[in-house]
Length: 161
Image 1 (tube, one colour):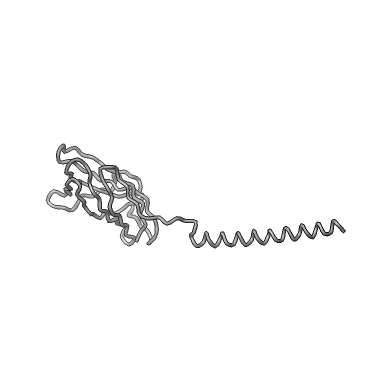
Image 2 (cartoon, rainbow, N blue to C red):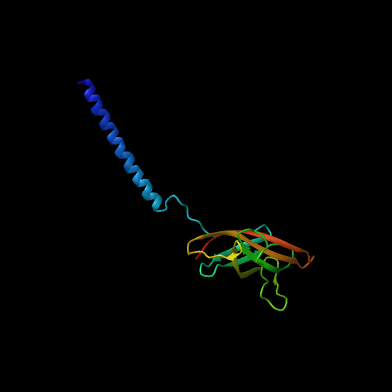
């Protein structure tokens, strides 16, 4: 008789805990499907100390990123070319459309806003709204005091709008 009650007790124990595990699993799957385990990702744009990225907006329809940067170097600069890609290499660079010199001059502490098409492995970025693009923004510039060329590479993580 004693063994019969022990077996019944064991079955009740396993059944109770089995249902608890099933319910917890269903709740965890529902929370995962709702995206509660995925932190929200905001657009980030980080440059070296000589530049600050004030805004970055990636447009899903065109693959272009609208950037507003502030220059913090010790001299007025001329941006000679800029580009955006997933490798950080100076490929697909474009000249500023600013005749006659095709350069953007930015004073110390000044800001400039420009649009640049982002590339992913040599082709223009094609992202859906809400999708992330991880890449780099490359700025080629010269300082007016020395005339030496410089390159600044910033990291960009942008959610397409």
